[in-house]
Length: 188
Image 1 (tube, helix red, strand yellow):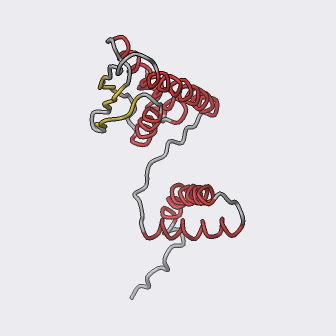
Image 2 (cartoon, rainbow, N blue to C red; image 1 turned 180 degrees about the vertical axis):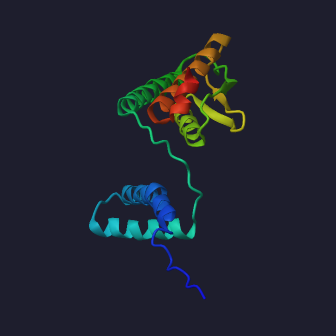
Image 3 (tube, rainbow, N blue to C red; image 1 turned 60 degrees about the vertical axis):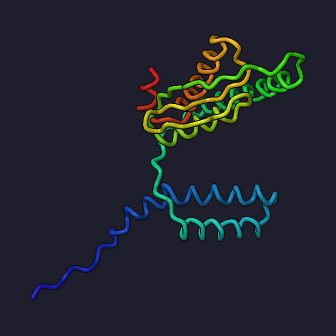
């Protein structure tokens, strides 16, 4: 009769690694969101945020999303500065379109092929593109990595091409700041 060996203490190592890699950043993000929603950073707000975040993550589990281990701080700052500048400029352009004496602007729906292969980076790029005033995402084709954009004030094909180029440039900035090495290579 052979004795069975005691269970290994390392049997839970993969689960622990997943917890540290995915669940803890998610819980921390939810706690920050909770504090921002309440507009308070008191210990009670943070404690209730932790409780709610743990309850949400444990009762409504999400599949792990592979995060890129590569973040380029300089490119991230460039992305944020350029994005904010684009939002400000586009806001003034949309305001001018709304009050200018000419009639209704010519709008277009344009197809923008994107180059990223990561679902997370693709989603972040599409979100950034959709947050710039003057255009919004009509449809997303994740399988073919492309989006349809409705763009204001595109009286000529050159204006539509400029909007397409602007969307692709924003995607490139997102990929260079947060994308995987494979995605950065795909830009070339």
